[in-house]
Amino acid sequence: GEIIKTTGDGFLAVFPSALDAVQSSVSIQKGIYENELEKTNDKKIRYRIGIHVGDVVMDDGDIFGNTVNIASRLESIADAGNICITNDVYQSIKSLKSLIIENIGEQFLKNISQKVQVYKINILEDDIKQIQENHLLTEANQEIRFCSSSDGTIIAYASIGNGPPILKAPNFMSSLEHDWRNPVWTHIYRHLAKDHTFYRFDQRGNGVSDLNPENINFECFVDDMRAVVDAANIDKFPIFGVSQGCAVSIAYAYNNPEKVTHLILSGGFARGRAKRGTADFDQKIELEKNMILNGWENENPAFRQFFTSTMIPDGTKEQMDAFNNVMKISTSAENAVRIQSANDQIDVSELLPLLDIPTLIFHNINDARVPISESKFMAANIKNSKFVPLNGNNHVILEGDEGWSIFKEELKNFLKQ
Image (tube, rainbow, N blue to C red; front, side):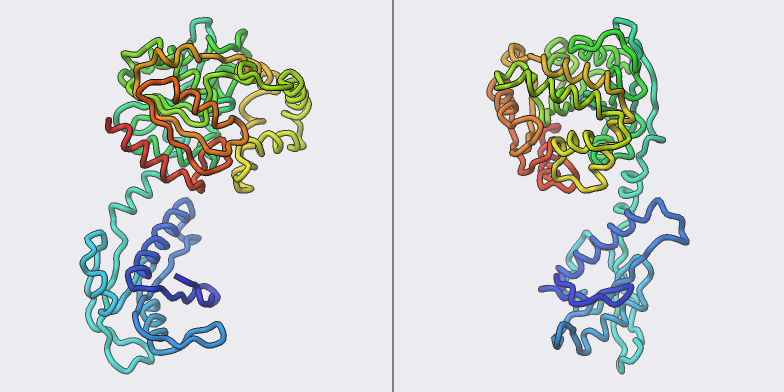
């Protein structure tokens, strides 16, 4: 449709068909409902929408005519949060089983000479319930527990949701509490927790896990996952890995093939930067190390903004600010250097052809942090794997990315296998 003009607290719009107008209006009402969930009742916004079909006169950026008048009067009698339509609109959409449509009879409308047959579209209760359930999943809904890795390091892990288990491997920075407030991650977490019991944990040196571990290396990362799985007593589960979490997932799955049913890898690599034959690697790493040590904990977010821009270059200001903040909150500059150094030395390439686990691999085509060639390398060497390239520049798949809907659909079909 096309918005013709705004009218203070409302708008007038035209659509190619009655069906388009109705579908758009239902989407608006659901979106507004979700957006306002956390606000108190006296602060919530609720739209009323009226829809009529007919000819209009367009003149100087405005529309006129009886069709406009009727639609406007329908809006005024609609319940807050719902939609009123005329019989002409109803005849075009009555076969849609996805809508609850109620006949409220003939109505007198202000300044309209004849009674008008009116129907009311009620937003489906199941849709509202789903919105509430998804929206209300926050850090307060998860259960946080602790376990001990083989070297005595304390690892914090959390579970949320109901259903079969799914485990997320930790990536560079994580915070069991603050990630839920981070628009970079909440859409992924809520989606994974919708039909599963979703488990995740803070990597050693991060979040509420031990912030001063004696050892930070890849072998410890894999052992931490073992400790969490054993403590949570989960079995037969898929693992979702992002970035270096993919290599951890691969190593754990190789060691425990009887436990892992699927691997879902996103923006990942089997070879750290030191193992890719990258030109000028040493100089680049030394520069980044100095930037981390001098800028990570600084009140001035200049370095963190630089780092964030390599992770989510197409992120909104809100997403970038949240990513900046979680860096400072989740770990220290010293730990960040130790973790980055460990990640740079990762190499599980020899394990790839030995895996016999269904694997789904996602990667944004123009990922600014990890080149897509690394995911292609994994896909070429893991038998029974599927590679799904996504349009985008971000390292993490954001909710507004073109690839988010593809990710959800591919994941749903993959987990059915």
